[in-house]
Each structure stands twice: as structure tokens, then as C-alpha cells.
Amino acid sequence: HVQLVESGGGSVQAGGSLTLSCVSSLHGDNLNFMAWFRQAPGKEREGVAHIDPSGMITHYDDNDEGRFTISRDSAKRTVYLQMTKLEPEDTAMYYCAAGPNLFEYTYWGQGTQVTVS
Figure 1: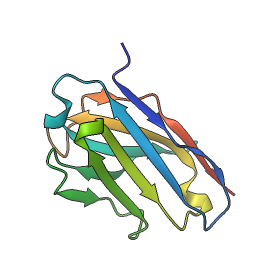
Figure 2: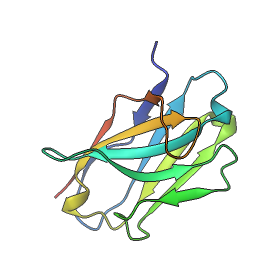
Figure 3: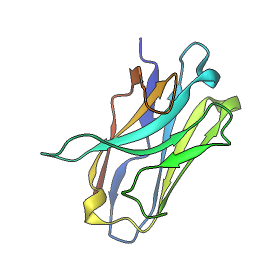
Figure 4: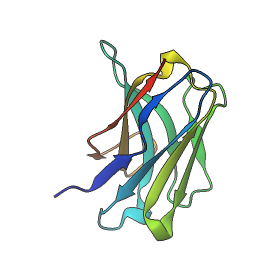
């Protein structure tokens, strides 16, 4: 039973933008903290952005320098990651995650590939 489904990845040129989406079918998903992580080939998975259940509190890891924005639409059960000024270093598989707090994630999506050239 698929519970988190990402979409919106693709190939873009450096400087371009993409918006990733993650649709949740988790029970009580509006109570979950949500986040985006990414993993590049040969590298460890790293956090990108996090958002609380209300959508009012966000936390960004150190790798986007203000280029990324996380948001959520509870009515659509969707979390978004807007990415601008993309760089080749942003190339990775991007994963959506859900969990009980900002630092603990229980559910993971299958990922969506972002390639920046």
C-alpha cells in the first residue's frame, strides 16, 4: 500500500526551477511532520527541508541557501518543494518523508529523480 507518492522531478539546466509534489494517503497525515530528503549517487542521504503539521513552521538544512521552499496543502494532502536556481550539485533522488517530529521520519516515498546539467 503506497502511502507517499512523489512527482515533479526531471531534467533541467542549471539556473532552472522545479517544484516537487508529495501526495500522502497516510492515516492522519495532517498530524505528521513532513520533509524532503535527497541522496546523490555515492553520497549519504541528507535532509533538505521540513515542515510541521500546521504548515507554519519550517526548517531548512544548510544545503539550499534560500533557494528551496517547502509548503503543504492539507486539503490536497500534498507537500511541495519549490526549487529555484538549481545547480548541478542538486542532482539527486529526492524523497518525501512523514513522521511524528522534525527529526524522526517513519514513512518514506519511492523518490523522484532531479537532474541538473
